[in-house]
Amino acid sequence: MNKRRTRIRHASHAENDRHLMFSLINAGHAIEQSLEKALARVGLSLTKFGALTHLVEAGEPIGLSECAKKMTCVRSNITQLMDRLEADGLVRRVEDPRDRRGVRAAVTRLGLERQTAGAKEVTRVQAELATTLNGMDHGALRRALSAI
Image (cartoon, rainbow, N blue to C red; front, side):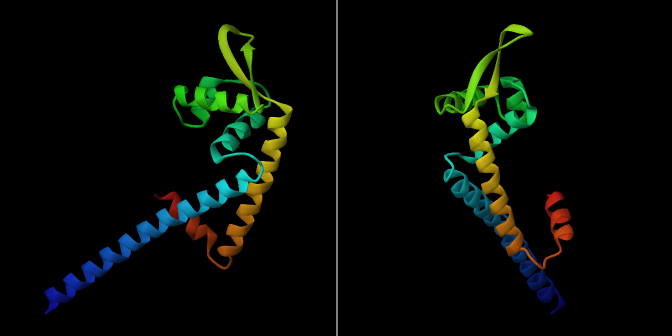
């Protein structure tokens, strides 16, 4: 009898763990979709917004390798992303004054305007999320998510 209860308890615990894991995945996807939808209103994707934010925060043109490192992606991906940003008029490539072979990315005025508009959209999504999570222990939630 005790073995059966133990098996049922373990099965139930495993099922709860599985539900929790998929709930976390679904929550991440829902937040990402909200951000993508909000940023699309200002003509950006989450990836483009991230790249523009790094450039704006740098305060000066930065090398593509440095940008790739900040965005944790490979150099070939950042080159393609910069191609798209440049085609959209949000970034321009400039020579590296310290290395003739090097190229840096500089945010344009339009890029700065879009990044600013995107930041407002991100803040709005954050506020909506905060409202949804109102009443929860944010510290406990943050610690739990940080442990993953």
